[in-house]
Length: 105
Image (cartoon, rainbow, N blue to C red; front, side, top):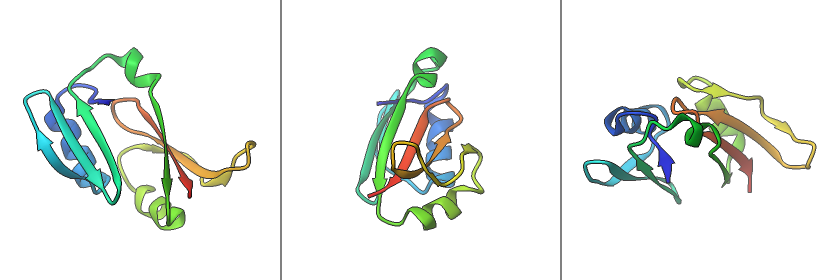
């Protein structure tokens, strides 16, 4: 579950418009989103301590294309590089403060 960082409606706009996710289902305080085979549940919660300590590693098949797509979104996007642990990846921090680590499958 990913905290929304405030209003769920605002988070859904970001994930849909900026990141290309589709909404699978939605209730008053939660929603399921999906892009390709990646699925998350968003929960309306503005607890910054939770959000800033949440990190998700996501394997993708075309890391270069996704990096180019996400470099222009309204998020803090780190460099695409091989990390000290040997994994080629980049990270982005979404508006709620959650860190998504995207790496080559």
